[in-house]
Length: 236
Image 1 (tube, rainbow, N blue to C red):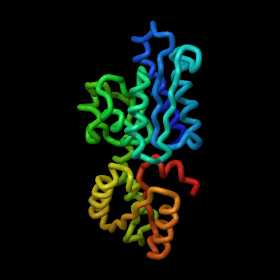
Image 2: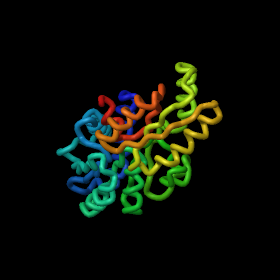
Image 3: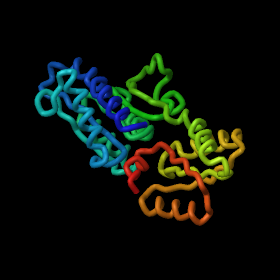
Image 4: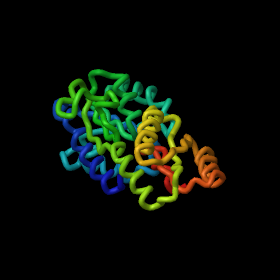
């Protein structure tokens, strides 16, 4: 998903996050909880777009709405504690971004506070909502379902590199969808007559090691899992 698309979706979520605020109009300063699995610096443009979405629905940070920002810094195990802290602060609504792992952590922590998510996976399969048309419960949001294009990405690699019989797949071992994604990719690869070599990385050192393995094993093509950590490390 390109950055312009990300900004558009986060702007939309800014508007979506304002829906529960209407019911709290009598509150002096309603509070939006902003929970992200990654770090603030690489996502500054998304925060700006989120504020823009709120502004477009007449909510201005510091004037008539407060925002509590919580960042897991790519440590997914911190998400449950960060979600619990937002709930303890009695926020009005929680925006959960940075992969499926974030809204899942928030959903496990509260069944009453509205949750708005942005993810690249199927929210029904992920267990976030009952259906697209009727999300039910306290969870709603936006998905771009980037996971569904994995077969197309494999087909493109086959066209670009027809001699590449083996394709590497880089997964974040801390992402709860990693093994499911591995099975999906390997199934799609078999249908295309290709083999998948799975590599894992959850920090900068492991990314370096994964690319060293690519060179050593002379693997000519690489697919990278859609993951917030990899997005923040794309320059590496």
